[in-house]
Length: 555
Image 1 (cartoon, one colour):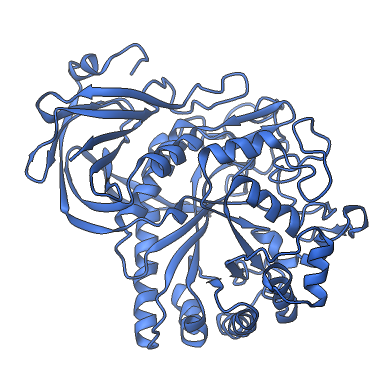
Image 2 (image 1 turned 135 degrees about the horizontal axis):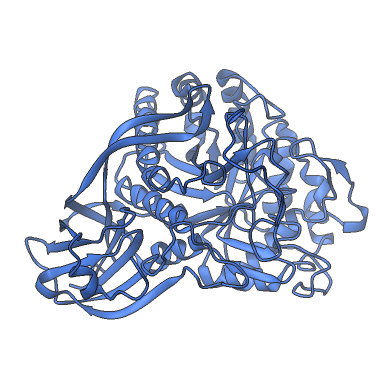
């Protein structure tokens, strides 16, 4: 597709395929929790905080006294503009060795420590009060994660943030500028404690016992906490069974971490089909884990409803470990570097994540597909009701921040479309149309034989339909995964033709390159385009290739 083609011109092309979308507004699937559009921040992590949302030397930052000093106002503004339902901090892997008391009090008096997770040194100049001040500035719900290595430490952190009495820790909070309790509701107990890369690595039974003790005593300080337990993406029953049987009644969420992968940086092709099909993998893993948690909870006789928290997820851009280390480019992507010529032929299983690789059109379609999957799974007994992508700022994020400014990535606009223009009630939708039978990549781990894949039928159109809260408007999000072929689609609403006109918004329809990305020089190369009111002749609309389209009309 070229940018010059109009919708009628696309529909007139010889290679246009056809499909039917049948919507049933009387078949409600479930309610979409806005927390699925949540985010994630990790300390000492690739410009996520330092040099991202917090920079004491930046001309864009607050300079006054208190916890707001050093917060970048341009980053605050763009986060407010988007709207952030919930943000997880301080990690991530960083959580496992983090001591929260290192990050409170006068900044110049805070200890500087070796970072045992990501390397280098952590100055602790951004801590609890700075994070919660930033949350207040952007109007988001904070989600704090404790290491699950020390019950006393966890309890005192809750006391510092939430207790309203007159104790040592509440006095410290007042001395640090916040006399009133913060009221932090959401707390994670541990991060990936199943992994030997974590300080505090445990077996499933050991974690279950520790998590139970943490949850019990944290709730003594604040009975209204919402607690997230560590789930696992593999060996699921061996970990999750003791968790649910031992501590399930004290938790509200079980977490799940899932990552997709792109190889376009090193394979010599754009890897497009593999990227846009991976929401099928996400959907299957979420659904299977949900069903297992529900069965275990029923067998354990739990009367407390559980939900899933996909509190780490993203699409990782991989590259060979032997390449020069990537660095942040001033324009929002990767800095220029000298790379070996040709496609690597050896050591391809020794890969790393390029944290500065910008988000592309292909990534945007993948993100949209993951949101659509969570919409369709919203009616599960243990449904995904929170999700936090890694990361919010820099490090493969919706927002790239550099010394000279910031840029909204392609995926920023996916959040805007799904979070701010979709409805809150998912309804049943049937799609008949073109599809392909292909191998779908199962996550980001490449073993000796390459990535694990499974044969799946991948429809060209991925559709999620919602109603607004008042049930007065229908919102249909349609992803056309096909690289180059438009799909002309007949839309049927409750057995009848849809209204003759719809409000149309889309992403990627004008992009000539599936790896197109935004930069400070071209901030709107890929953006959310509002087409206004568009005619649907005969109840039909032609969805451009490699695009995400939202059709809205009133009932």
